[in-house]
Length: 255
Image 1 (cartoon, rainbow, N blue to C red):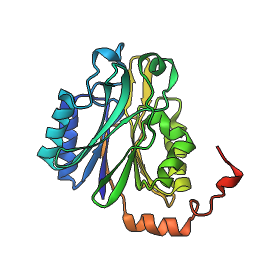
Image 2 (image 1 turned 180 degrees about the vertical axis):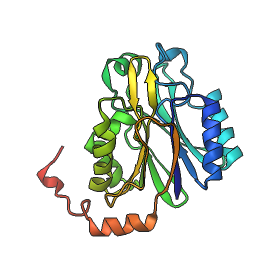
Image 3 (image 1 turned 90 degrees about the vertical axis):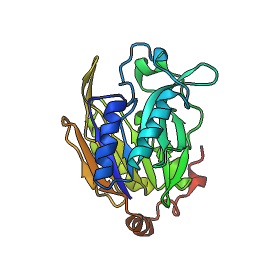
Image 4 (image 1 turned 135 degrees about the horizontal axis):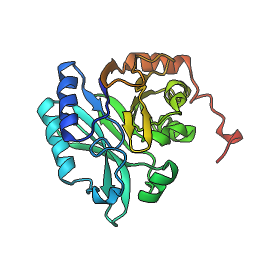
């Protein structure tokens, strides 16, 4: 399955629409955009921008996905049923139907912990074109337990919209590929670039494969649309060669 990763300093529906148009033209079946891609990361008071999961912005993303015939993973501040504000990722199919909604479970730093409520559900998955997709957001992927939980639940491709800042480039260059290998799944990691408020985003978006390769990698500064394939045959072969999940001994390392 061909996946497009949008590395950008822009935010909003116009940016997403342009990326979806290019992704579809390049044969992608799914477009992943960065964390909080509809609004930008630095919002002052995210509650002012928060919408319900089925709000007007979600409806607009669904129309974009259906118009271009490409599934879209995107980020936005969500207002929950109880009024709490969550850092949320949504996934809609190429027909515009909602496939999944995930609330970030591991909040990073004082800015996020001040303005957002962490999600309470780690495993959010969706099926698309024969593959099982899972969702995490940025800091979540830095916890091996979160990725391993997805692997044990059958996730094939882990979608990670992110806003990784400097000087933590090693998360993108070292940790993300390691997560793909140790849990035997693909990790699609879409980051921002440029400065926003006090934050300098590190770029280096990537698709990391379970066999240790990185089929697509962006640099640390350019706006770009990466396109690469998540290959079910490679996934199956790598899992056969690297049976980490089958060889686990959880009785030795209980929770």
